[in-house]
Length: 269
Image 1 (cartoon, rainbow, N blue to C red):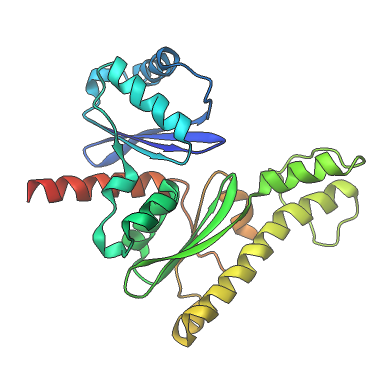
Image 2: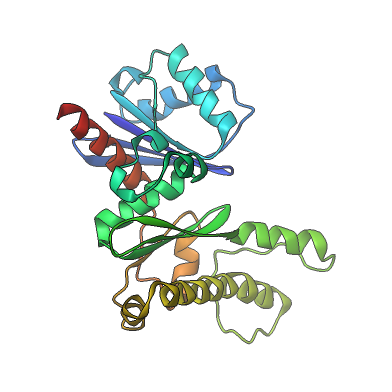
C-alpha cells in the first residue's frame, strides 16, 4: 500500500492508496512539536481504523513545505521500520521543464498539483490551491510548469482583519453568501473575504491567460481552459468564481501518487 502525505504549515492531509484506488483520506493539524513516538502512534491508530498495521505500508511519499515536519516523518519512519519516504521533489518528471535549482525552490504541493492537473486536464491548464497561502500555478501548452502566483490565503486575510480591527469579530466562513451588497457587518466580512478571494483569483487568472497569449485567453473566455481548484477552502470559494472550471479536494494527493507511479515505472525500465 502507498501512503502519501501532503504536509502543509497548517494542515497535513494523508491519503492511503491500495490497488491504485484512494482507500481513505485524513486531514490533520500540522504539529511540529509532535515527537516521533507520537506520530508513530497516530499513524498506527489511523491505520487500525482499516484493520491495518504499519507493516501494510510498502511506500510512503512526502510532499512537504515544512522542513521540521519532513524531518519528523523521516525519524518516525526509521524508528518504526516504515519504508523511508520518497520526497516529491526528487520524483519530478523531466518534461515539466524544471531545473534542479527550481525544484528546490518550488513547494512540493505546487509540484504535485501541476502534475495532477496536467494528467487530469491536459495542457495548458491552471491550478489554484486554497490553503494557508493561495497559489496559482500554470502549465503551458507544452505541458511545462512555467510558474505562478503566491498570495495570502483566506484564513490569513481573515486573521489579519480580526487582529488589526478592534471592532471586527471572527465569523464562520462556511456559510453561503446571500448578496454582495451586505446589510450587516458580519455579511460584509463574509462577502469581502469569500467573494473577495474569488474575485482576486479570477482577476489573476484572466491576466495570466492574457500573458500566455491570445489563444489561451480565448480558451478562458470560452470556458475551455481548465482551471482546477483544490485545498481545504476550495469548496467555499469556487462557487463564487467565474473562471474555476472544476474543484478537486484530492488533487494534491493524486499528484503525489502520480509522481510515485512515474518513478516506479522508470525504475522498472
